[in-house]
Length: 472
Image (cartoon, rainbow, N blue to C red; front, side, top):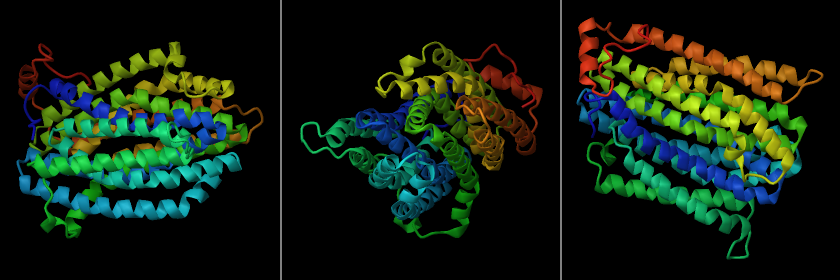
């Protein structure tokens, strides 16, 4: 266990961010590897896999319920030095991970084809997406267990084991993808089914490795079968924090589904170009998101320790780091989008759409970074309802106008991207306002002597005497 209530906040962020980022990047690489090898099968296969991947937002919503609730409550317990409560929350979260995994398998088998029919541009895309989903569902179901174990470690300040496990899983996926998709070395090409199967095998290995780590190495939180009987009061504690955060991902599912819906009349190339651009955009968001996620456990432990000044300072330093990172990637996306998108499709029309998407949508990177930061701070505070509110606002300010615009004469796909910039900027402004309000409600006012003491205790930021953005 790592105590995040003392020491330099910036050093804690910089120490935790790289392993978190590597873990997230490896997951994204799995998806990009699938797209890369599937691209040889044609636009319908690429569009089908990309659109099917959007269903992962719904599963990610459930994983967020577990992950956010686990991180927040265990971090608070660590800050209070309450190890028994941390262990109880961990084991109750394991119970929920099993239930959610079973639900994912059943829903995936029953609804995959209906989902693809609702958004795909043609029958070939429907078939490709449905096949991929059915083979990919075991991976999604097993990720609930890895989410709980990784979140418990992150709440205690430990991030390296999850990174190593995810990196190995990606290596396995990269090795298996060409073999199963195109039949390299075997002569038995499984196509899009092979993409889903490669990911599922890789996740199985990752789960087994994390289980071995918890059984042999981890001591602060551990599996305890005596605590696996569902306890409604503690399950409710997890869900109260996690459900609004899960709702945020559900809002993203709606957001992405609307994009695919309004693009369907432009054909499979448009959906494929968007799918490639969106996956690459997610990849270049990872460094900023990793920094933001590192702030959650730091804020959470300090909330548990009743250190209000340190919670506020965590936000300030995180927001500045995230903004600098996002500006750098925005400049790269504007100047050389081909460096980020090279190699994902040989179809000129598909790649031109991807270039256009990345150039336009990168203009909202700073706003998106602030949204990430606010979301992580709300998780650390243990109240994620404002996150759901801001996400719902983005969906409504985007979805209804986008659908209306798609019915107007002269509608072009770039209108979808420009509208997204407006909606994201509004969400960032609302998130900042809600966080300021939450700070005033939940944190004690910071006395001047506390601000000076905090600045002196953090050698990385010395000689600064007070945080910027004081109003927050």
